[in-house]
Structure formats: structure tokens, C-alpha cells
Image 1 (cartoon, rainbow, N blue to C red):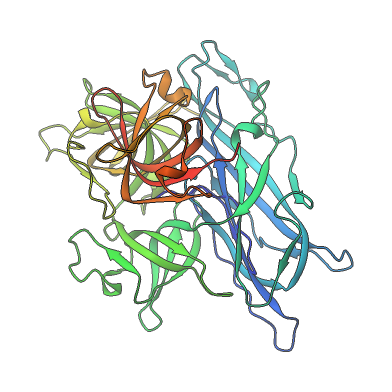
Image 2 (image 1 turned 90 degrees about the horizontal axis):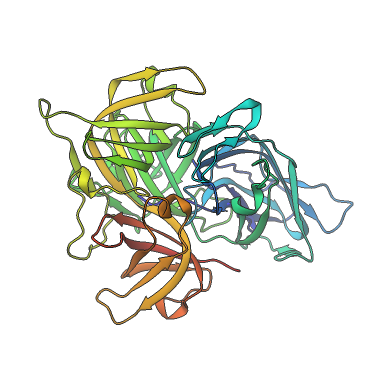
Length: 485
């Protein structure tokens, strides 16, 4: 499964994307006899911070609007209802917020409004931190809190790129709004002053439970994780299906109500629903599934900790768990069938020697999907809640890392580069470098034309599978995004 990390995308047909847990599709048709319309799309992603490690960052997009250059014309609303987004997993992906037609013409600015930020941080500063509402975050402690929002609206306008933008009728153009977490978080009190830039959108990613299937039109509807929003997805003859042997046909007929699937999609035609490039089975029908970032591994106690990033459940006890919470996952004892470990390779041929077969193969920074066993154990009261859940399945999923390239080895097999200046989340745990393996299937974005287009000193966001290899961890790259200085 791929993770999303884009912010807003805008097009001649208008779609809006926000990076995190997902977004919803908003469709609008050209009115008969009305003005020429242009399809536009908007996405969102984030840029990770330095210093105190942000494990989870949620914020609600309450509105977004395009302002025509002709100020006598009304602004065009891009978001019709609030969208709650988790940004930290969107460092190498994009998530769709809206997809609608807007009047053709020239637009001078984009305004976006935010509300209700919520963060989970890991305090590795060497001293206790004072948080809002009298909270204190101890050394080495993961803490949830609601930071102050200093500014609720941000406007990107000409002459700041890419504005002004001229949208032609029936001519798609997608834009991406990058929410820079590093710049947005204020060092003094960890309050939030949103900082955004706009660029072109590359694609989008969704994970959700199938709530409707239209076999005639070859579309299906997803219920998206924590947000609960619905997203309709189109397929065609070129859509690739991967059901890991569960359904040998590997086509549209494999889709079943209640399954959780991962979808890579693109906006390809004016005003249409997102078209799936790949559909992958994430969890069987009606099976509980939970996604999180590994923040601690304790082999001696046969357990690990994760920061929850998404949850797909039909269970009242599990559904009460909030996004961003740090929970303990206990591998079931030998009296039960031992937990199975697997890899979501997404069709990649992995280099030899990379394993994910037991707890000893786990390392902080990995993203994993687990099958939680209920009931769960809850002790304490907010903000000091402790949750332990058992599992019998752990699957390695792609995770993002943003850092600086310190070395490139194009002649290696496979070619690779080294990431240094890693986030404190890694360095505080003794990880100072990560080797990134580049495959023939690795995708490069933001003007990076492949390994030859990268240089030492570049900052990149890499999405892929992270392995606990001897010496330094190895990240097998699915996507590499070159960050602008």
C-alpha cells in the first residue's frame, strides 16, 4: 500500500486533495446553457519538521476557494464541508479533497481555511515540555495535545507561483498544496501558523472499506478510515488488481462489500471520478484493520508500539480509539497460533536479504498494518490513557522518510543513495543513516529524472518499505520526491 502526502490540487476540472487520512470527492456538472466550465482538483501534503518529532499531525480543512482575477466575479468554493486530515503520512503521496468543475477563466489566488489542529509528538529534547492546558510532556514521552492555531486562513496569490492560473474549458490542470509542518509549528509554544505553497499534483492514494459496488459501470465506493467520508472510484481495462492470491482472477470481480482496499488513482478527464491505476486488497471483508507507525520495539516483551494513522473497524471498542494515539501491540503468545508477518510488496521484486518475518525484523519508522484482537485493554484516563491490543497478523507497509542525500552509489546492485540528517525520531534511537535502494520501478517526481537527477545535498521525501538490516536500515523506494530548497 502506498501512503499519501499531498496537500491541494487544482485543475481545469477542480479537485481538492489533502494529505493524511483521506478526503472526499465533490462533483459538479456543467449547467445546461451555462458558462464554459473547467475541471479543477486540489490535493494536500506535508513537509516534516526538525527538532521535536511530530508522530501525528491532524488538522481540519474548513474551506478553500479560488478567487477570479476579475474581482467582480464571486470566489469559487472548492470545499463544501470540513475535512479532517492527518498529514504525517503524506510525505510522498497526495489525498483528494474535491473534484469538481469550475468556470473557465483566470484565477489570481487560492484561500484555504483551517481549524482544530491536533498533534502527537515525541519529546526527545532532553527536557520536559510545557504543553497547552497545563500539560507536561516528559523526556522520551509521546504526548497528544491540541496546539493553538494562530491563523485560520492562508492565501496563496499572484505573483506567487503558480498564480495567476488560466483554466480552459475541458482542459484538466491539477495543483498540489504543500503544507509545511516544519515552518508551521512555532518553536516557542508549538502553536500553528499554517505555511503552504502550491505546485502540480502527481497522483493520489486512498485506503477504505468498500461500501458499494456498481458492476455495470465498473465503479465502487470507499468509506475512508477515520474521516468516514465516501469516495467513488472508477476502473477501466488498464486498472491493475492485486488480491494476493485471495482472488485468482485479479479483476473487478474480486471486489466484495466490506473489503478494505488500497487504491492509487489519477484524475484523467474533466469532472469525472478518480480513475484507479491499481487496486490492492488491504484486509478481507469485515476484518478489523489498523495502520500505524512503529515508535518502539521491545523484543524481550514480545511487543511494539505504534502511532495510529488509520483504523478500519466495525467494533464499538476499537472505534473509540482516536487517530494519533500511541498504543502497545502485543504479539499473541505461543499458546495461540503465532502471529504471521508479511510484506505488502505491491508487485515490487525486493532485493535479496530483506526480511520481515518476526519481531526482530521490526525497527522504528516502519509502517505496519495489524489485525487487532478484541477485547483491548484500556487503563488510565485522558490524557494518560494506555491501550494494549493483541494481534495475530503484522504486515509491513510503505512509510515515508524525508532527509538529505549524503552519498549516491549508481554502480551498486541495486543502485542506491544514502540519507543523512535524519529526523530526531531516528537519530535518538541510534539510526544516523538509511540506505535507499532504487529499483527499475521506482518513480521520481518534482523534476527528478531518476537517480542521475539527484545530487548530494538534495532533500528528498522517499516512500517505500523500510527494513531492519545490519548496519543501517534499508528503504526500498517506491517513490522519490525532490524537495525544493
